[in-house]
Every structure is written in C-alpha cells, then in structure tokens.
Image (cartoon, rainbow, N blue to C red; front, side, top):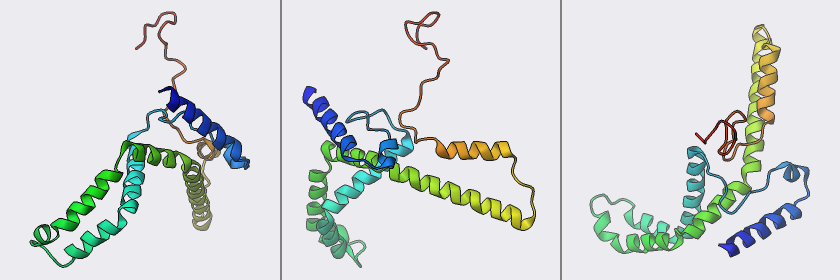
Length: 178
C-alpha cells in the first residue's frame, strides 16, 4: 500500500512537471492512482477503453476466430472451437486489474481533450442557433440565459462531485452526519 501511494505521487508529480503548456497547467491533476468514484457514464467510458485495449492486444486471435466463423451459422461453435479457445485465453490473460487501472489512467489523461471537444461542440451549437435566429428574424435569447450558457461552458469537468456547502458534517455543531 505504501509503495502504491509512493509510486502514484511520483507519477503525478512527474506528469505535472513535464507539461508546460497553458492547457495542461489549467487542468486539474489526477488526485491518486484510484481517484474519486466516477459516475456511471464515466465508468462505462473507462470500461470501453479497457475493452478496446484488450481487443487491441488480442487482435490476431480475434481475427483468426472471425475468419473461421465467417459464413458459418450452426457449425461455427463446433468447427471453430480451437480459435475460440485461443481467443478467450488471450482475452483472459490480458483482462487483468492492472490493465483496468491502465485504462482508467488513460481515460483521465484524455479528459482535457474531451473537455475541449465538448466546449467546441457547445460553442458551435450556440453559433448555429444565433445564425438561425438572425436568419429567421427570431428575437434574441435573453442575455441572462446566454450568460448562463457561456458560464456553463467554462466550468471544468466534474470528477467525484462536490460537497454541499450547506450540509453539516460529522463533528460540527448541530449535525451528526446525515
């Protein structure tokens, strides 16, 4: 356990010191090797990365099974049993908790790219909406609504959620937790 925390602190410090671009400086560092819990959709994205990594490592075995099963229906399980076992064994070998951790770390490394892509799409949507309003002579959006949408674009990605400021915490006056 101590070696895991030491290795995670050294990896996070080396990654933050090696990048000097303003976008990387603006990004939040990964808090630990297994950071705060992710939402269900974020976990699904991590799972997709994990499956893609395992499939990439077992590509030839998967292709051999697919080539064997091509054009077969009922006979595929019997005639392609050998390639199926080879493919499954390869996937079992590579589908390890270490590979899952690596997929999670890859997902966290790409979160800045995802945030930029999301902002780009949202800005494009706002530009298109503004153009259509001008084209059809529709009234402009309320300035307050437009301001809130722009503020929403500027917010960073949420990982793990935020603690409510009004919630009383354990040990504080008048509160014993939830």
